[in-house]
Length: 250
Image (tube, rainbow, N blue to C red; front, side):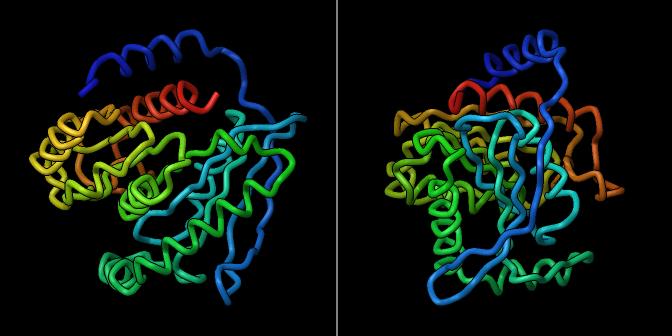
């Protein structure tokens, strides 16, 4: 839908943004999800007052150090950021194990965990309860969109190369503005599926900013993906993400 306007704004943001990121504090946290206790990684700006909040949803490998680093960077931009562990402590560093973790995670449990994380965030005194967004990568991008389908109070949603809903009824339920970032060479989430979702969002009169990067495959933003990482594209995608989040959450 808006393939170029947001990118132009991101370029201006990069040029204008000469200030250093704010200092943050981080901690491991736990909170209840139904009858279970789940873990998360919380990063909070040191500055006083209320801040917009972000639910950070990990990729197929789990709550890795790279995800925690992204969470810290988001807090440095003024967000209370909470990365939750949907895998109950499991990590995967090979594709087969990652696939097994993805497919063995029940969708209803993942949604329950995300809602529990939201309740954890909005109970904090340093969170602006009306400014809550979600961001995820790969399967985390899929969960981010699932949250947008099911939570009408979400104010912004970022999906980095995650699969998208195809049911028109689900798409109609999306209220939050959505940013989608994808690779043109992605074999897991092909370009034509992205374009089909874009058309469906347009037909449903939903807000969808989309950027498809040439020369990028799946998981191109993760620096630990030695074969697929695209540094220059990743930096542009990051600035695009910050511009989008600032536009809708600040």
